[in-house]
Amino acid sequence: MSFLSATLARVKPSPTIAVSTKARELKAAGKDVIGLGAGEPDFDTPQNIKDAAKAAIDRGETKYTAVDGLPELKKAICAKFKRDNGLDYEPAQVSVGAGGKQILYNALMATLNPGDEVIIPAPYWVSYPDMVLLAGGEPVFVEGRMEDGFRITPEALEAAITPKTKWFIFNSPSNPTGAGYTRAQLKALTDVLMKHPHVHIMSDDMYEKLTYGDFEFCTPAEVEPGLYDRTLTCNGVSKAYAMTGWRIGYAAGPAPLIKAMGKIQSQSTSNPSSIAQWAALEALNGPQDFISENNAVFQRRRDMVVEMLNQAEGIDCPVPEGAFYVYPSIAGCIGKTTPAGVKIENDEVFATALLEEKGVAVVFGAAFGLSPNFRVSYATSDEALKEACTRIQDFCASLS
Ligand SMILES: Cc1ncc(COP(=O)(O)O)c(C=O)c1O
Image 1 (cartoon, rainbow, N blue to C red):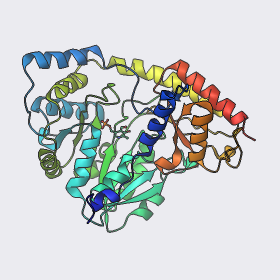
Image 2: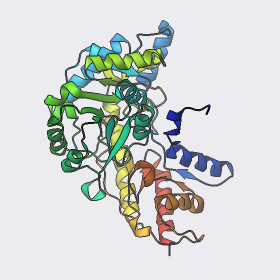
Image 3: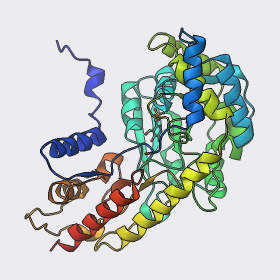
Image 4: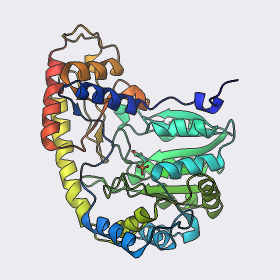
């Protein structure tokens, strides 16, 4: 009898972690490596948020809290949904967990039975399929092609829905592409979902605040109020408030689902850190002006990276609407050979050769379910980005 569970065998190790491990090994061996794999802002958490955490410690807010969140924080989350998304929620419809990741995981664990299907647009955040598998469900992928701006079509969504579909996971702006759906594009999808009342919608709005230019964020329950009763709207403070290490995510949705998610959390981790919850409260209720300041920096970097990557031979890089990623195609490099004699057969070989021959760490597209591409995170300094893009240009020019 195997010691490790059969469930675990359904899951693969994270390919993004594999890339960072390899980059770390090369760095430790003295190689000059630039990492473009980070999924977190390089900005520090704003001072008012840190101060709120310190004050919470000094007040003695160091005990267990309600399992799925402090009442004060739930109230602030309800106010945020009203203010930003025009959505009305009661505190009993809100759950707070240790990061957006735990929230999504709780929801899947609380609802999936063997054979239940979950529709995931590809390219996708690496954790969605494996979380579905861990919870006993079956991921069903719908491809958002590069020529469609990495967005799925309503026809493709319709075709993927079966009687076994339990959830549709929606993520805009997206990790890994940065692609965002306009209101009209999202409405076309919600029109399809309205025809299938057994399908629930998990909207992962983690990158809501990180959008550029005149792109306007929207979320399914707001675009189609008819979906309110079967939508879980998920969000968190990790990306917008540069708080990845604090581990606070939240969601709002139907009260019975929220209660079920709390039950899972009560038998696993209990409440997220009391101190981090008080910090998140300040993040949501406090000044928001640094977000647009940070976004101006992100937008400048995005534009520089897109321009420099498009100057690289064989690379085609679309301009994304948000997040801090770009997802260029390397179709023009496939079949070529590197100076070290490696034939670029796919995006994984491209990323490995780029790391070994030029010291630039990116994540290959197959990890996110759409090839031949790679993901660049531009949440790093302008200098590092410029140097990395120059190296990518040199690498592409050296291919024959
Ligand atoms: C699309 C998406 N959802 C959720 C998360 C999880 O966020 P958290 O760090 O709050 O768990 C991430 C983090 O990378 C993400 O990219």
